[in-house]
Image 1 (cartoon, rainbow, N blue to C red):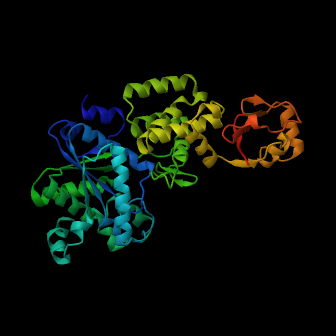
Image 2: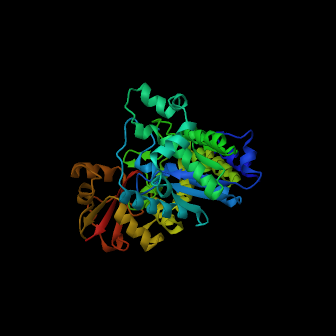
Image 3: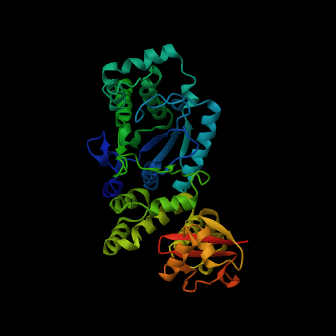
Length: 415
C-alpha cells in the first residue's frame, strides 16, 4: 500500500505544494524535516500526529530530519499566540532539546533519523549579509498577509520585529538543510502552512530548486475549539514525570465518542481495518467504551511502553470493578495506591466509619442508607450488614476497594 494512500485514509493530509501528493510520497525517496519548538522540556499529545506522520515516512524508506529550534526558540513563532512569548536562555533550550529528542526516539521506535539544532548555524549569522542575501527574497507585503501575522494585527496585539522575522529564519533553516542534508520536504501542522510555503518559494527564487511543503490537519477538541492535547488540568505531556502513564491512559479513556475514530487513525499505528473493527464493536455497544480502551492502550504503549500501558489498564479495570486486586500484578496494585484516592484504615474499623472517612458518604446516616439500598460493595461483595467491620481477608497486599454505585470508588490502605 502506498504512503499517499495510508496518509489519506487516516486523515493526515491537509495541504501540499506539489501538483499531486504522490510526487512527494510515492516517487523518489525524499529527505523530510519537521521543526520542533523547544519551549518546554516535553512534547504533549498534540505533537504525536506529526511524529507518527514522520514515522510512516521512515518506514517507507524516506530519510527524516528532526530540527529542534534552539535558535528560533529564542525568538518564538507568532502563530497561535495572542502575545509575545518569554524568550528562553541557551541552557534551558539545550536541556529541553535533549529531553524532547529522547521522547521522539521512543515514539519512532528507532534512532534512525538525523537530529539537528538550528542554533548551530543561526547563531553564526551576521546581520548585514543576512539582510542582503536572505531578507531581499521576502516582501513585507506577503509577510503581513499571513494568517499568523494578520490575526495578531487584526486583534491589535503587538508583534515585535523579533517575532516578525521568524519566517525568514525558518526559510533559512530549510535552505541550510537542503544544502547540508538534501532536505526537499518540510512538514508541519496546518497552522504552519504559510511559513513552510514561504521557505519553498524562497529556495525556488534563490536556488532555482523545487522543494515541497506538506501539512496535516490539526486535531481540535470539538467541545472547546482548542488544539488537542489540553485537559482541565492543562497539557497532557509525554514526560511521565509531568503526566503519569496512568493519567495519560485516563485522558484517552475519557475521550468523547465523536472524536474516537479520528484519534485511533491519527494517534496510533493500528491498521486501518483494525480501527474499522474496533469502531464497529464500539457502535454496537458504546457503553462498554471498547474504542476508548483500545485507544488508551495503544497510545500509552507507544509513548510509555507495554508494561506501563498494561499497569494503567489494570488500575482502570480495578477502579471500574472489571478486575479484582488479586487478578493484577503487584506493580499495578502499587500504581493503584499511588494514583487513586486512598484512605488509611485499621482492621476492625466499621464499614460505616470507612464510608465517611473515605468520602463515599457525607455522614453515618447517609452511609447506613447507602448500605440499606445495596449501593456499597467491598471488593466484589455487596455489603448488607450495617455492623460489618473490616477484616484481614478483605485486603490484598494491604489494599482493598470499596465502591458506592459504579462510578464512586475509594482505595483502602491497611495501616
